[in-house]
Image (cartoon, rainbow, N blue to C red; front, side, top):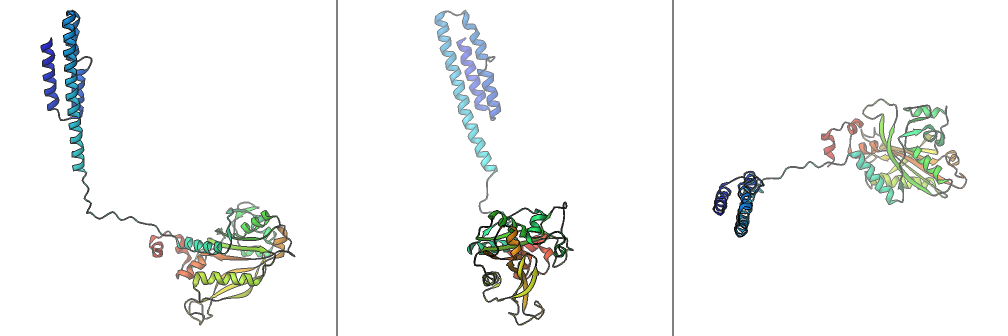
Length: 342
């Protein structure tokens, strides 16, 4: 019996030393050390031995098992190390190869203009306010001095969802909501950027969807001079410090007086050219003093509070600033157009 155990030890160690696979090595462990292995079969005869012989056989059996286990562990470490070396050899990285080009996105020109305007007005003490794009007629028109049946509603051909809700035609309803929430107490100093929608035929200068940035200031001592100074700073920030502006009388239902704002042409400097059609001026936005009716409907005493408001078309500013001739370029998702603004 003892001889058989030694023979099994030599046999097992020889097979272990010749194996080249971890799975095969595990099979050998099961074969020799498992409950149905040859060592276990030999040990079944111990019940017929004398106590002294049984003790000696048990000691030899443990030595054989330990020797086989040690051989298996040694071979396992050897095979694992060899597997790692082979993997490293197969997956060698040539660090001298050039890296892969990573395409980095750029800021869309509309977003760039919006970010620049937000930074400008935040530096002047304004806060940025937002509101829903699906708006109630009450906020989109009525609180802005445009009651039902008012002819000026035709100026903003609208996408109605129901009789009382629509896609907002401007970001002015955000101003109406802020005025209402203030409960007649100023000051208010906000800008409202966002998408707006109007039923319009898309062409080089018109779009059914566009971006508008509106501003509102309400306090006890706001004048037209404050409005002009603000818009002059805006024009010089966006188009250059040598730019000038002029205000022309106009009409908006929610401001009185109302003005159209022009800036000196960046190409000719005000001398006249094909861009400004010989006038030296280019229209950039509309503005005016907040109509007393708008203040009163939102709970403000128009004899105490005054304010000004303005509306900027981000597309208009971007087209003038970057020399873009077709508003549709902003919405075609053409990377050749976008990548020009890196």
